[in-house]
Length: 199
View 1 (cartoon, rainbow, N blue to C red):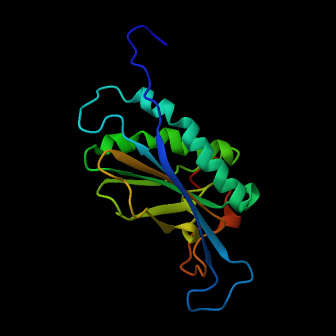
View 2: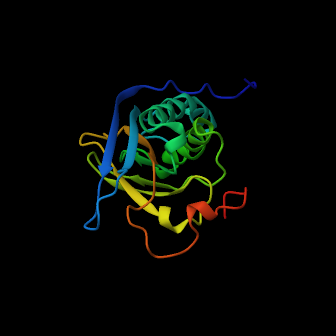
């Protein structure tokens, strides 16, 4: 650690959750393989609640093991070779600020990529400052090419008693597919040709 660098805060996890949704149809024909959408959340104490902190890089670094643990839990739940879509989210309690959730871009996003073998598509995300029980719709798209239209989807995350005012809820989401009956054209998953995460 460089001289003058603040010590990274201790990460205090109050609770975690794992939720798996199984989608068999949406009014059309039933599918032989259900779409599984899994979300893993961690609710932590916000070390900067109620005050301004100029340097958040230590916090982002300290959160990397949390991201890795949530990503590994999702991979175990769905199977590494089955994951086709992903996204991430943060809900910051009202004594914090939006930037406290932005640390998840690296800590959560890189963790998912590492757990999945380094897919190139950007990890879509959403964040908010809100009260306990708030729900977020997390955007999802294909892990290897962001323009695969069939995989533009979303998943709801939230925990009834979180985040409390001095907490942050961090979430990762993975799915084994896109929408259950995609039929609006666009780039298909089997047509992915590039290696830049776009097309």
